[in-house]
Picture (cartoon, rainbow, N blue to C red):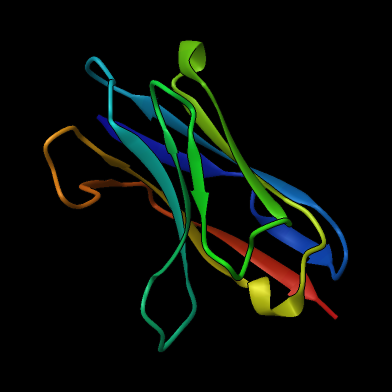
Length: 118
C-alpha cells in the first residue's frame, strides 16, 4: 500500500484548504487513518485520526473546531479540511495508516506543504 497526499499550497490566514490522501496498491483496510504535521526542528505532531470502518474521529486540541477529517472508502481516500487557518498551521502535512493489532501508524505518505501567510 502506498499513500499519496496532495492539496497543500499557500493560503492567507483565515483561509481554508483541503488535503487529500489516496491509498493505492493491495487491499486497503486499515483500522485508522491519521494526519500529522511537522515543522523544521520539531517533532511530528498528531493532528487527528478517523476510524476507517466506523468513521469516528479524534483531534488534537490545537486544531479542534477548525479541522475536519473525513473519508471516502470507495475511493480509498481520506481528507483533511482545514478552516480558519493560522500562520502557526504552516507545516508539512502527512497522512498515515495504522492496521488492526498495531500500536503505531506504519504507512506514511510523502507529505504536502501548507504555508499560511499572515
